[in-house]
Image 1: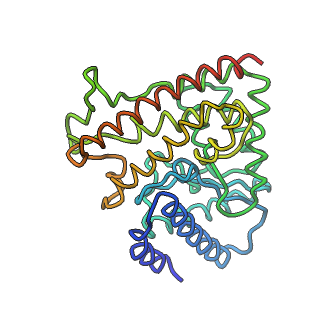
Image 2: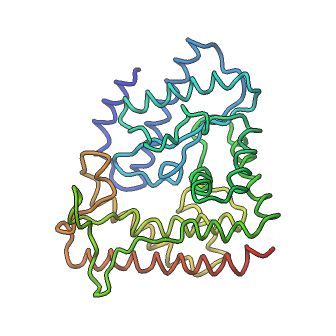
Length: 320
């Protein structure tokens, strides 16, 4: 099997996925086949893998929230010495090239295993996480949040767990960092105006379209990330985070249902788009009056959930 074979399989099968969960299962299978092929190619060229490693997904892939088109967000942790860096970066580069052929665009921000920032030894990763939190800048905390929304696709899951454990130790001894993490994602793009109207893009290529990711999805995603950080839970998919926290926070049950419904709503209106740039935008003219009311409710409840999460952090997690 070649990358081209996998791409053809993707083109034949991707539009057959019936719902959000099936689509993300398909992405996992597609990416895993691609990474396994990349690994075999590198073994032929560079020899056997020199140390245990984990290839992990981040961002929407890490959270299992991919649309029909997706870009690449991933990294590598290896349990070895500095001399192994070149091998794993070569593997990362092969994975990036393979995924691009299969149909996953390169990440504009270069959050990919081909980059030294995102492929490191376990010790360097532990230092990197602490450094991001120490720095407390807007960008470093964004890098941290991107990293924390991660799960292993191939390799040793414990390597990622060990790095995430550093996060919890850091928060335990620096609880004030939680307030900075809240502030880092506290801006919510308004999707509804003062007169209750939806606020689409006013200019450019996306005029008349609303960004469902920034106005509706992100408040739920960010709220759940903050709550699992507060509770030392490593899971990355937002739906799994809801399930892990519902027993402790009964108020989450309603939002859990809403988020599942929101993912289905997004799938319905983006399943037929033809390029990556379109997956987060929905033309308002596609929405019925009922659809618009539903979307407004998702936005309203998302902002409400984020405020509840913020209050919980202030009360439980930022003053240990």
